[in-house]
Length: 486
Image (cartoon, rainbow, N blue to C red; front, side, top):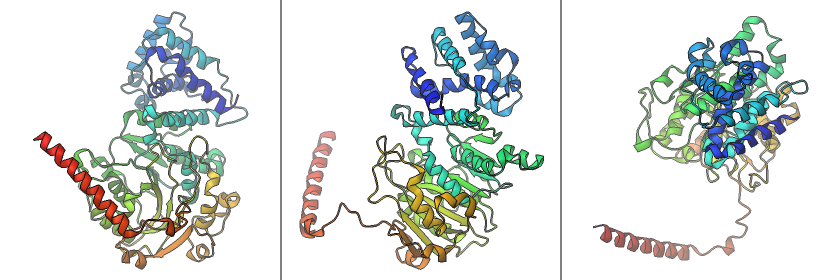
């Protein structure tokens, strides 16, 4: 049975639990607790689980009530009795949403009956869990999409930043840890699952190379399990990067991130005091944190998903963009298609930059690639895949095609090679040109085919008159409401 089929089978178990009032998101958390025990046996790390809580012990209990009592005992005490830090964190403050012992039995029996042998696909278990996370993110009622980034986008960001062994990488808003897992997998594929490295190097890659921080407790738990199932013993902090905790997150060779969108509640500014331009806009604060967290060696790099407002917001936004372009070589901005995230109307971009050795004048040219205009409407009917990035990859690398990317691309940004790429979606603006636009970077989009004939548009005077009419109508309605309220 394929990983996709197994994930579908596990996901459908949620339907059995409907009469227990369990939502999809709650079910994934519940499944995390139970599935982790089963997979600790398959992945051969069950010695890190206290004996009375191991899978073989649980499934051997025949009485449903006794089984349910042992399970609740497990959730309450396993974090106190295990010696593994990540397992301790996975089960910290764990509790069950199940109310009927028979439903617990159903889950344990169904999971135990699955053939988990990985002869054909060594990463089957990891793929299954990734699939479940993606399904949960796609379930609108779960609200999980806020911390899930499409896997094709993660992969292209990793491939273009070219991680290297011995480097320290971080995601300051890591969600389910997808970016770091993908970066780790990139290197495992290059170095035979790290067996090509010596013992010291292998230990560094597994324990220290990839770290993260996540504010949401449920997402943090899923991240820890996701990392463990991928063979990573990473440090994943539970907390707010924009607090004092974030001041210690520095000295990285690479950062990959998709920070949460929006503003602080009540317009609050970050609690840490080291930002030059503190603002209520979370993305702008995360952007400041990210470029400040990189090493100042001319090699440290980042790729960050950010909404359109970061490119054009005035005041602090303008100052932060200038600071970014001074401290870093902001060499590429990818205008992403709409509809690839959980919020269909959100327009996003990926900013690619390298931290300079100096504090000023590092950005000379910024290349823009428009994957948004005249593109397919992505969703359930039209899947968003890695192949959609083919032309962008060729432009970004200066001519290297997808099939040769991993072997041939070294991460070097060569403006001369980039300039030879003939693609209407690929445009370059100098730092001087952007300065003349008051450092507004909401540019680089091609002509929209939906606006094909300007003769069909209304005259400017007619548009202006219509706007005045609508504003007057709104004003009158507001005056009526004001009178009623007073």
